[in-house]
Length: 499
Image 1 (cartoon, rainbow, N blue to C red):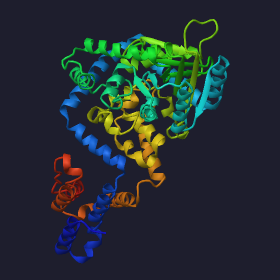
Image 2 (image 1 turned 60 degrees about the horizontal axis):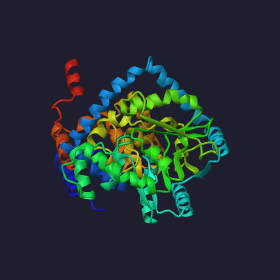
Image 3 (image 1 turned 90 degrees about the horizontal axis):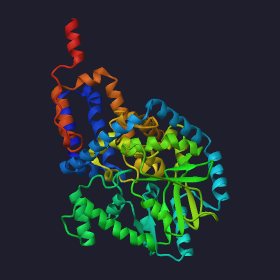
Image 4 (image 1 turned 90 degrees about the vertical axis):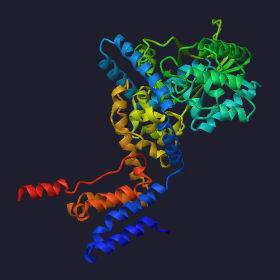
């Protein structure tokens, strides 16, 4: 092991300036810092990427301006949307109780959904992992002998990286939501759960269309929309399979609810002969009657609307007495780590309806944006669930990407205690011994020093200034001003006052 030269220099200063019997005490702060130095130098790959991307985005003022502009418009709309509720607090509490009931009886409601959906001719597939879901979709595509699918907006398909998988197998998967279409053209994943291209201005979108489609570089938003509409409508007509997600699953009718503002999801389910809906197992509601509460809440907190423009319920393939709808309909119920979220510490995270309100309220998200998280689900709720979906060891750092201000909990339509679950994730990582020897040792030494006033008072203010501002310069001090300790601590001033 090579000891950093800075640590050696501080040891020599201590030996030169203090009597030998002080050294055991004086060496605790430097070695605490040394161990801390080692712990931060042994970061996971995902943590390294996260910090690098965050540093870039936090310093990008133009990026922050675009995000702030769009979030400000969202906030103004939400205020108006909330006016439709006579008692918003009661509505939120009632919705939380409904989801509590579902998650506590998840097995029962999943079986009820399967029974009612298959009774109308629907075909249900259980997928424990992402790979199982992908293979099921690939098999359906091969059975239909198709090389093209159209896709409505779906975070679950982003979670399993469906587009990349289909491309690897020679199948063209086209995003039909305008925001998703823009992101697909630009080779980027969605930036936000609800608004995929939130970080792009109209000039940015015009540039993407110019670079990828050869259109003029100065198109207006209406012109961009017309071009997207023309290109996508050709895809609807020729595609044999349409793929959607699902905002809610209705256990009592065996229905899949899809909520949208553009009508593209309806076209994805109307023209193609086969419909595939991929939905997480947590999206269940007990009854179709619950939609009168959940649809307005999702619309208000998602976009500020009273109700979303298009709300569809699919209960299976076209029936004998029906004139439209797919000839075949598949529902893939995806676990992919969701049963890990059933542990009591983070169970509430399964209540989430993916409205994105916690992202818009989070000061960290506003500064670093959605792509810095390196995961499908970003922001506060993403920081809670991603370590359990993707692996605690690789993604535990996301639970520290929070100021714990509690604003995410405050704005959640279902009153999910998000910031408390971020703390629970930190505790889980510690209990499972995922923090490493160096980090654990660092905090033990820090605790020892903080709980012992004599240790705190031994080093002079000048010594403390040099240790903090010089040894921590490349880590803690990189983006912060220097810390200057007072000549006398409060403890010393208090003692001199009482003498």
